[in-house]
Length: 630
Image (cartoon, rainbow, N blue to C red; front, side, top):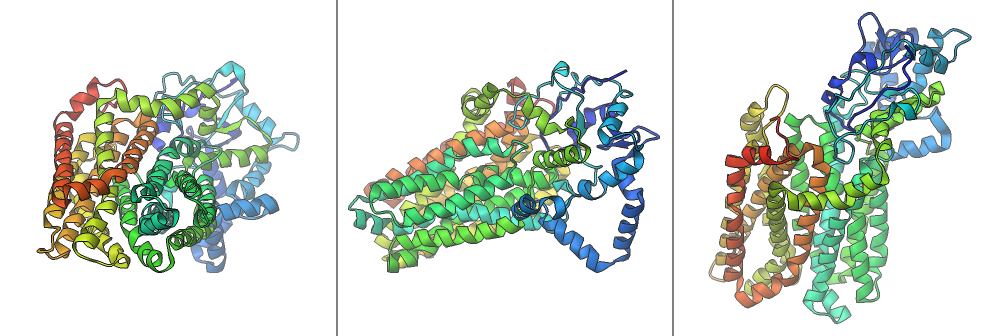
């Protein structure tokens, strides 16, 4: 029976378990004996088998296994660059002759050997379709679309037969989950460097606030608006960039590098600003274009690591995100004092350009949806068969403009106010983020006004936050390995509420650090004591960020993109607003009482992780959107 089309109700996901619901019979063959993806019926041959057992391919694999090291190194080097923007640029000029993929080297030859002289690859694939039973996946409910909503069904009567492209087996080397530990570590380093570069851009500006105030004849609060607008920009940016990065035809890597290039170039007019308004406008734009990695860096980590190991990568990414603002004033304080505020912006441009060069040559695409889309496009070209598609293409094709608009503009805000768990946790993280940026206004009051430090030394006072963040790593990794990992079930899943114990510890440390800092900041107490108190805050913030962001993703997997985008927006708005009144609060109330006020506010949120640990599962079961099956 001829199969007019195959229904595709799939998620753009990097998790192979989504595909388990598909019947093997639905995976259409490229020729009489070759399947595009694994799950091959008994007695037939997969594409992976054909590649491995074909003459040239087999001989090549044998040579590699015997260690013809020169050729192997060349192959590995080409593979390392193959999915970078550098490689894409060369391929756009020289075509598929450079950085070739397996489909471009071996698959066409294999097909030609299998086909008769009168049959084209497309005809062969079409003839195979006649023997494939119709597969109705209306019962498949696994996964979500690229934008975090329930999947949609492709109408069988509106298109031709669809050939679904997936990984070449569970060990496909193109799957980021299967990359070597060294490659994952290298990509993690670049992700953390990019995150550090953008986050340091918010705080490096604070070192130049006094000279900005003097040059443009504005108040200190008005000069601080440059920090506020930068943070507001990177809060709004993900509402645009994050959904685009989930589109299979785009992916993450081009957005990261394009926006980083714009971010670096925008530092030039920022540093050359001739008036206050021009400076503020460009500070907002730089924050907006620097924002993608701040919202989707966690998604990049998730692309490469299975859930049980993902927490390690998320922790490292979080440490760089938390430590960057604390190093910003240190990097900018000396240049701002001796050369003026403009040099802090030049420093940011140099760091951005260095990051751009590194990512341009070495940062690969990590989005499974984009990798499979490109594979499908290569196979379409090789076979001249337009019916070959990836799951991501099919999912996006079924989304209307209205659906996309709802995903981007409405759902993040709707979920924030309609879901009690989301609202409470987003508000809490917003407070923690606001407290992080309040340090930039309180430290000058304490270490310059009280302890009499010189302006150029102020950046050293932030080292407590930086050191606390890195001291946090070893004990937390030990906790993940010995305590949290054994709690995962046989499917590699963890109850969201199991994330909360570390959040409870973090919630208690926040007011402790604020009381400590506020009431030890006096001339009768050595300056190192309040710095130690501030280091406790960075530990607390990392515990809370790690627990809350993972909890939201685990509890709302279908709407994870929308929930996390809303979280990023809310916390950025808190972080943008609080510094505007922080200095006045510390000057008028005094350091002790201002810190006490903030500590009491933090105490009001302590019950949230405790209640979620005890009653979170019950609350999830009452929600229409939260996950119920774990």
